[in-house]
Length: 237
Image 1 (cartoon, one colour):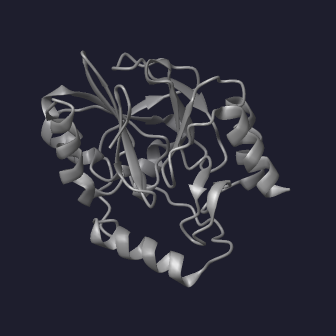
Image 2 (cartoon, one colour):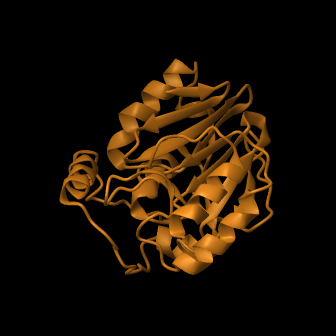
Image 3 (cartoon, rainbow, N blue to C red):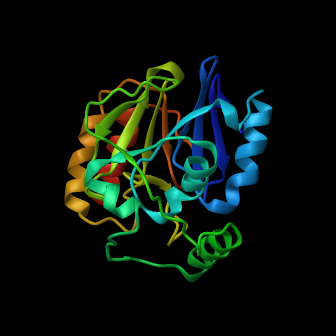
């Protein structure tokens, strides 16, 4: 799905991953679920690219529903995978968290589990090697992705800003569709380790001045960062 010039999404509002496409190659942002691999191939073809054009995968954090096909790209195609140093062990499956689930609606949870199960989400392939990144890093990858630390959802949760595509990729720093309740609109994401820290971290996005705010779960947001941060704060109030 093309969102704008050089900006594409795979998956849907339940689980999504993204690509930055330039003449110099492709940067994959998050790797969704392993069963979304055919969609990755199709989206590359639609953009006139192949797996040989993928220069790197940048993860917003190390949770299993963002790791998806990352190890396959690394192992079989030599694509480096970048994750914040505080989430490196998480991405390698060496540690896990047990955050509160919060409110649940059975229908929404069932849809999430059905989709995740159908797309390989119950069989996580953790990374065996990662390249670590830090807040403020600008990676030598297509779209010149810049790392913005947003700890809270996980210790190494980050946003990835690319001025080239007028977008910031936020992973689970916020959501526009709650996978456990089905509620739409900007709001705190579930499964967050430290909700208070996550809420405070979002302030770093407010003055970023980009159009697209792209979460791992939910509808792509194209009304800017100030408004999305305001709405998440209002949702919490």
